[in-house]
Image (tube, rainbow, N blue to C red):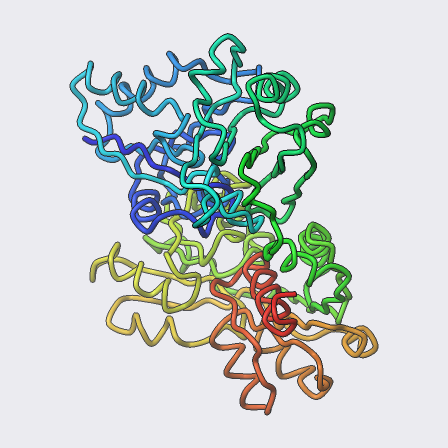
Amino acid sequence: MTVFLVGAGPGDPRLITVRGLELIKRADVILYDRLANPQLLEHAKGSCIKVFVGKEPHCHACSQHDINTLLSKYGREHRCVVRLKGGDPFVFGRGGEEMDALIEHGIPFEIVPGISSALAAPAYEGIPLTRRGHNASVTFITGHRWDSSRIKDTCPSLSGTLVILMGARSFPSIARDLMELGYAPDSFVSAIHNATTYSQTAFNGTLEEMASRKIPSPSIIIVDGAGAACGRERWFRNKLFGIKGKRVAVMRTPEQFEETRALLEEVGAEALNGGTYRISPLEWDRQALERATHVVVTSANTVSLVKEEIIANSDKTYVAIGPATRRALEAIGIIAEMPDEYTSEGLGMLLKSITTHGDAIVGLRSSMASDILSSMLSYLHYTEIPVYDVGIGEINEQGIRDADVIFFTSSAMANAISHLVQDGHICISIGPQTSSALRSRGVKVDMESSSSTIPSMISAAMDVIYSRTGGG
């Protein structure tokens, strides 16, 4: 029985530590706050208990006392409890208080550091906190419950960089106090909002100017008394800017297209409908599902087509291929396990670890799914059951030609429209099988998504565009 105080990092879920992600996957219970990216929870096992203990500014869902009580309770009842905290647990995260509560109750604990937004925000805005020949110190302060009477103790030096956390609301008072202390009114200030996320923005100005501006929360505020931090190279915003206005062709079912459109619009890109998939239900052996001990579900389409049969057999152990499929199962009340890698290979590895020779496994899938899983589980009692046929419906050739980027979301799509790919198109593949299909037809894959999800494909497109423009 151990409680792990885990730093979730600053916002981008890819910035969590290897150790932190490992513990999320193992956790029996996760207590998380509002600054921990919810995408991280998708890595938790299906049986994991997830408890939101978040705090909005001046509006707390749970008091710190309540959180400490929950940590002690779950720590006594479960083997692996993760307290997932935004940034780093020990940088203005009240991790010390939670550690003290665990010590008081005799509960073993570990601290897993995270990347603090105090470091990540200036890095993503291209602002060095220190620079040889300019400043040799950094002071981190909290603006929460700002006390002007302690300004001299809080900011003892005028020569270093000042990093203010939780100071958006109180910054007018902080700025006035800093100028009274001796900071120059023209000191450079940058307020970085939603750092490391697609919605990152920065508000820059002099100390005097920023004192009268309304700064949104959450923001990290950088005050550089030495003038070293000027934010000349805003590499991350350049990366975000690169995909703005780009036209991205995708082929999805109508419902999936709307979801994809919303995700692309978040980064300022335009979704073009390259065509639709045609989903046709098939007759299948429902008794095989009743006899099964484990059920593999390989798409959200499967859930929508056979949800009544799944609900009727809710006593089985369900395994979903990825986050979208697991969310679809959870929506009908089914808890599912999920592999670390959202591929047939990943599913195979997970099933090998949770099944024995006496188990009966069925895979509910499309007629066009690969045979990799069947091959990997040939030594087990595994039966694949196609429950629907997926075909290419209408193809929007003009939409594909007009695109700057094409998201290839299946090998079927690759086979159907590869002849429409032109010089200049950026081709992003959702996974190895799709990449193989594209290459077999002579199409260059500019990048393969690191996981089989649309957000991962968007990140891949951003990386390709950024590299082609030289980062500018």
